[in-house]
Picture 1 (cartoon, rainbow, N blue to C red):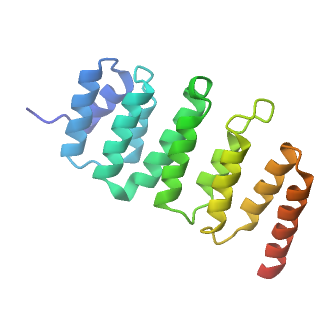
Picture 2: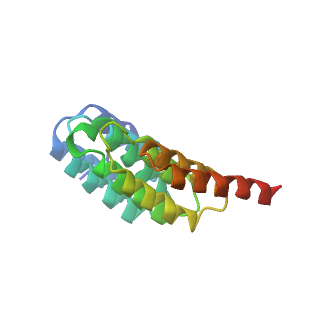
Amino acid sequence: MPRLSVEEIRARFSNSSDFNEIFDAFEDAIEQRIEDVELYRLLFWNHSLGPDELCLFGEKLAKEFPVISYDVYMWLASVFEVTYSSYDNFELAIAYYRKAASVKPNEPDPYLDACDCYDPDLNIPPADVLIDFLKDGLKHVSHRKVLLLRLSHLYHLIGDDEQSNFYRDLADEADRARN
């Protein structure tokens, strides 16, 4: 089978609605060892693909190119946050923020971006899930203040002022320790 050019792959990722055509382009990109995250972002935004298909492509991409797995997981999380949140209540977004954090646990972005999904009126995703995720991040992130402040804010949103004040005080202490 003749290989597709990068432009042909880009066009299929962007414009095709035929899964087989998209899959063939994806396989060709993998075979050519194309590690360009920007190219795969087009694939992830293809509206003809459902969540299962996006997960399939994302998991395969992360496995084939571990060096870009963090970016793949962060991008998938943001796609799921925007496009499928009404269907799965952010479960897929949170799952991929967790995967990104497992690749680069010292990066604060997966933890913070996951919290940005929170809708306090609906408690979606559940605050306790986000709180546990942030607490796990505290074990890894070197500049903890931003996570501590986010924990304080989450506790405030759910009405637990004692914990909110506790984490705000810890954030203040972390700030003083750095100075």
